[in-house]
Image (cartoon, rainbow, N blue to C red; front, top):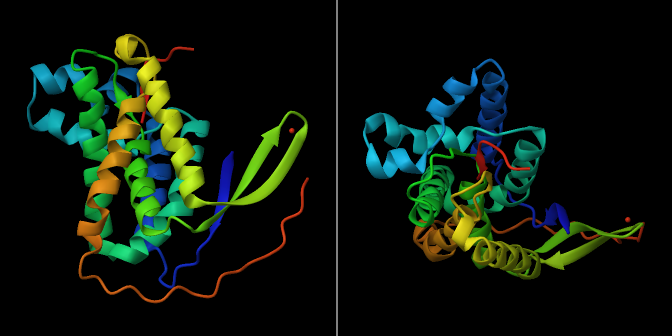
Length: 239
């Protein structure tokens, strides 16, 4: 099930969400000019955090948050950020949203490091931070309708599903994937599932703190419409 957009318009221009997307794209373009050694130096390596921690290593919590492995990686992450980030930003305000996003990314990375403290496989990607946004969205807008594409064999159908179903299924998938890979999570590259879990839980637990006292504008009128039916291991660890 692939989300395409939500039927939950915000009244403010999501300038921070747009800025985050722009920064991610610019960093991805810059990555194409770097060597593998230079990329490794900017990525977050759990072994360095647990054994060689210093200011430079601390900064990789943030540099790695804006790096991506390939077009599919950044494309999927930016799609989710665009769909869900604007409403969370609207609920918090710009400054709080920046802090929430960055702290979600740090919490996500620490969750993965807790499970794989000795791995030297670097972690890159925004999806840990975006997982925090998803957790926040779920608590703030559980009944918001999400237009999603469902592919079943040769059939493609567009449906609107409540956020609690879409995001709940997403979290369940992450949880069981993480449970299945628990013993080998630090041995091969791939998806840092525990970062997704940690970021999502952080978002759930803290979103109310970040919206406390912030006056939200009433949402705009929903744009309802009829939807008709229409089918290897890596050196990095995706966040």
